Image 1 (cartoon, helix red, strand yellow):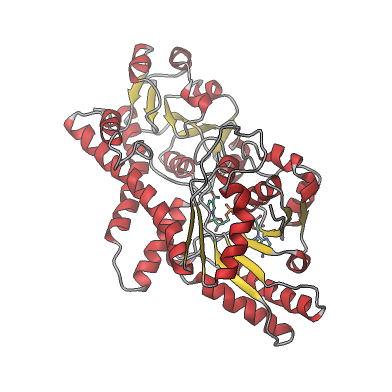
Image 2 (cartoon, protein in one colour; image 1 turned 60 degrees about the vertical axis):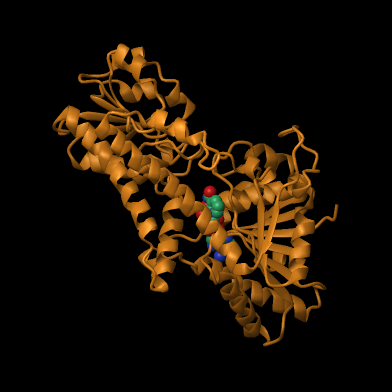
Length: 460
Ligand SMILES: NC(=O)c1ccc[n+]([C@@H]2O[C@H](COP(=O)([O-])OP(=O)(O)OC[C@H]3O[C@@H](n4cnc5c(N)ncnc54)[C@H](O)[C@@H]3O)[C@@H](O)[C@H]2O)c1
């Protein structure tokens, strides 16, 4: 295998995992972040985010993995430089490209300086891994060029490639080493060849690892133009969000007609054309990607005078699911004033500490504004949630959250929540011992037998 010098700018969920995995398969990687505290922590061997398997991978990759705040140094020494910085929602939902733009301009300046010192030979391959709207490849290219011109107006050799990321928080390491596909968009063939060689150990699954010793097929490598690669990322997330909103629409109908959406999902999911995943009805999608990516795609549509009717509906169904939690609480508690409500799970999904756009935050705010006291449990994200919501009491044991609660809401299906003992829960809770299962993961019959007032989503 050909060994590359790789720079990764942005040592967050995507950048750090990408860097650690590329080091694991044999490349020399330098992760660069502007956050000095984060870089110092990483340099001391501490991993600032919770992601299963990541700490171990970073520790094992020490010889080939380094951390720094020095972007020009990474530009000078890298064959391939990934941009993996944040692209939060900006005005009107469109993606805020200020971090990407700042990096691109600095890359241009650093390239021009390296060129002056004759420190580089081949063109630098600049890879957009951040999720960015169509046209961002050209935008980054323009900013690199402008950055270089600020230094000496000279031509600098570089290529821009789009390489959208599909990892899921909670299984990010696994997804990066054993991906469903790798998507690459570029206008120049040589850049694609470099990327193919870089990813060869992953595409061929030829790297030695104890992480998943099962033999695997080659990973599909999809090459296309820049715009299509950028669209693939948005289309994938918009489709998944729509699939969840679809089953939530069915759940609302199931409640009206007396059907059980979990059985409906099983029945339709066995159809290969539909597939069983992403058909779990409940309080809907959140997190750092779906809300912002769907919003950005809707903003792109409107930029072109197109009304994205389906995407609009996907979002409004999702907003309805949060309100449905409050309605379920109100139906059985009547007034929320003076009541205690436990939120079981706070992270936007299990196995992560990420709270960006977590449904728990909105539900906690709504419940609190209606006069109830909210106590939240999460095995990992508790501290972060407490810092964000001063009115939220955070505990680290699910039964402590349930003690004295009139109602509990399953918000995040952590294993600790799925395996809740209904008898113990009922013995600790106050009447009416309402359990709103926002993820349809608990056994309704066992809950009812234990004396809990069970309410799922779309379950008759
Ligand atoms: N988190 C996910 O599950 C996921 C999945 C697929 C794609 N993405 C996309 O990947 C991108 C990164 O997401 P993330 O969740 O890793 O973000 P993050 O916020 O966890 O990390 C971003 C990092 O970039 C650093 N940064 C910002 N500006 C910088 C600069 N000018 N120079 C150096 N470092 C800088 C920040 O300090 C931070 O550490 C986003 O576009 C996101 O949409 C995320």
